Amino acid sequence: MLFLLAHPDDEFGVFPWIEQAMAEGRQIHLAWMTDGGWGGQDILRRQHESEKVLTALGVPLTSMRFLGAQHAFADGDLCNQLDPAIEALRAHYAGASLDEIIVPAWEGGHPDHDASHLAGLALATELGAALFQYTLYQGEGLPGPVFRVLSPMARNGPLLPISVGIGQRLRCILACLQFRSQWKSFVGLLPFYALKLCFSRHPFVLQPVLPQRTAERPHPGPLLYERRGGPGWEEFAARTAPYRHR
Image (tube, rainbow, N blue to C red; front, side, top):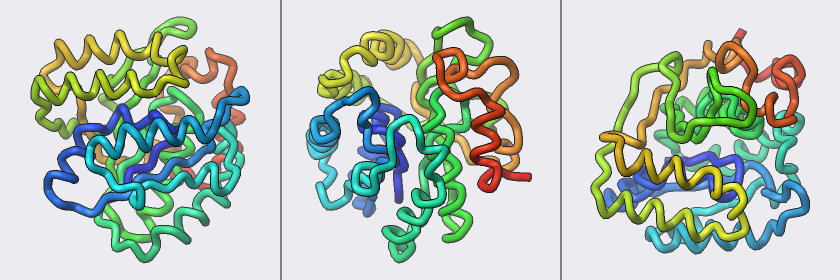
């Protein structure tokens, strides 16, 4: 079971599946696709924070691979590095007998999330692995920088929930506090994340990946990363055209 993450700390969207897989004795792998160095951030500090959080869940360090840092895939620029990123995944995991690959959702929240989605789709197609997506955040129908957390889009297919008890929900919230280098991001994320975990019956869901969805923009209207100064959809679409469904 391979979890693809765009940045160190994106694991906040898949904690329950990691815990479940560990409880079941499954062999899991986690791969971070960018170096996490956006704006000059300390790459090693971010890695160590993820290692600390995940080892507390029982994940061995040998299951974690920071491909983005290893291959210098810059945070914020993965859509321009998909060829070497997919080759790195192929080199590291082609012989891993993967049954499932879990990728960030095609939701327009961050360009690296959508690019990681495409990288996972390419690898799953080659290996014949089942492919599922998890939501992080997106801004469909919202103004400016406003976004929703853990809010899957209906157009991405049926919801596959996982049961999460009260104690586990609390652990997820507390784990986010360990990403201390990212406190500015979590000032915006964590309140909505906590509310979702407190009041939603199924705050964490997976959805099957629908390859045909990648032929179109994640949702109508401006995407969150467009509204936050990232690449426009037309630019992102042009850069990723060889990897999207036609």
